[in-house]
Amino acid sequence: MDPAIAHERPLLVRWMVYGRAILISFLIFAPLLLINALQTLSLIVKPISKPMFRSINRNLAQFYWSILVWTMEKVYRVRMEWHSDELPAREDAILIANHQTAVDVMPLFALAERCGRIGDMKFFVKEVFKYIPGPGWGMVFLDCIFLKRRWMADRRRIKNTFARFRADKIPLWLNIFPEGTRFTAQKLVEAQNTAKHYKLPICDHVLVPYAKAFETSVLALENQVQAVYDITIGYPHGIPTLWQLLCGEVSLIEVHVARFPLNTLPRNADGIEQWLNDRFWAKEQHLRCLQQNGSFKAPIKPQHEALGYAEAAALL
Image 1 (cartoon, rainbow, N blue to C red):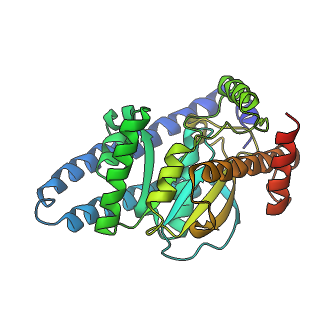
Image 2 (cartoon, helix red, strand yellow; image 1 turned 45 degrees about the vertical axis):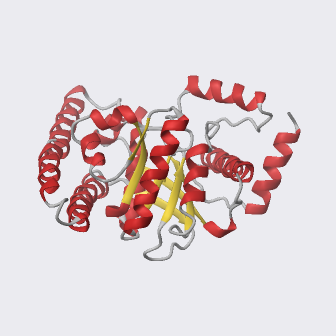
């Protein structure tokens, strides 16, 4: 539903919608504290069996995140329009996505559930998030990677975590938002100034991506991860807030997924950064198509994406 139409509802209807949103919010988020308690109890088995400890927390995450997907699709009737390459079963992957709103995690959860990998999801998250009861505390038990935005310290933490992933052969769907923050009008202006400074194409729908975390992930996980999934998330009726989702004002989410075997990516920092910039230029084209046509359906050929990026950069 278009949010503008939603605000034209009669006042009584709107208050009923708000009441339902508050009730469902409580039913969704309150159980997180119980899950946190169960995760804390799982520490008892960690000295005895780390695989059992991880299995408990994986199953708790799978159970809870699957409920979120079910609520989105069955209670709120949000339709996901998929434009996806074939994704092999049981494949470990790095996922890169544009970031516009807290709602972005929902299509990521839905994709993971479609592929049977929802319990294997791990995220790069801002350090402050781990102090938030519920989702933040839960991610601590899931080996998510908390970043302080101080690269040398973050780099050591990332490499140590990846070493543990490799040593323990942990199944992995690693989610990265390379823009590092949500899309806003102010941040877009800052990103466009950055793009001009570094002679990058000027985008209107994505920010300039930061390559460090992605580069480290590609190089450190090359013997564990088989592919990179490039995910573009779009909202035909405008970028919604989480509250708008809870109020039933989101009816359609478009998701484009392109799969790239990891062995096809460059193996040096400059090459990986250029590859990531190319992918975000491709996201810009998809989002422009969505704005113009209301859908990602108009195809964009990969060879034209790279050519378009080079041409755009040459104009600066």
